[in-house]
View 1: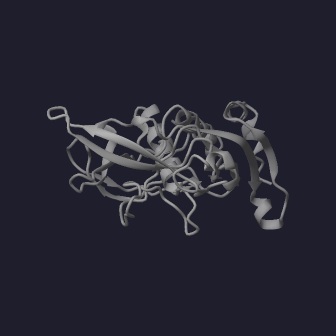
View 2 (view 1 turned 60 degrees about the horizontal axis):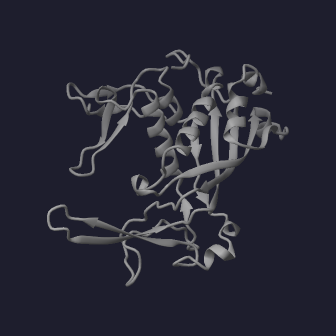
View 3 (view 1 turned 60 degrees about the vertical axis):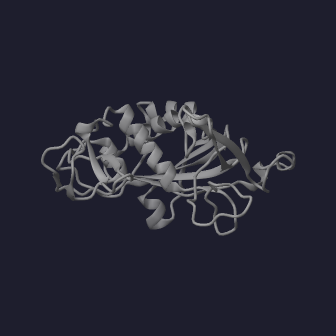
Length: 280
């Protein structure tokens, strides 16, 4: 847990900007729902922007990182979970608490209000509101990462269609389905911003990097247990922009250039890292 307390005062010190490539190591499926189906098309299309290009929604990446941090922190247990939605068949359970040193809630924010506990008992009457420190943006596709050689073997200009079968265990009847995926080798440009609103926020980037490393050995999007969604991060660039950057146009401080997650983790875990985040 962090050193935040109920008396911690929030005032912008600066922002950490992390950018880089998110590469698909296996096909990636982040679904767009089934609002429209084309004859001969995939049953489960991927989400696309207004130009018809696949992208990784910031909400998908943010939610996966939060879930992985909750699991690694031992917070994905009934006693620590609340219902965000209780609609039958669409229940959403997340971790939330009023503890000021709860790093997950500090990073992702929390709203006050009444929430039902998953473990039962009296509902939580959340009284503490805190702003989210972490912002994740939609990651657009890097079009040149889909090479001409890859395009020759794709089912569509930018995506592939994976055919799957679910087999009834009694009758052996097959239930075919198709899944649209962004192919292995495609890259997206991702960007996240971590607001440092107090001295206690300076170590929080280490938890974000932990979540990114966990994601590399986990999955993103749908079909993860069936082979989809393995990703990796590369060409990472970390910059620090203090208040003077915004108030008077002072230059940003480059902290890492074209590194990998191991180099980034070594940087943010060093005892000198907090001193690099000068206020002015």
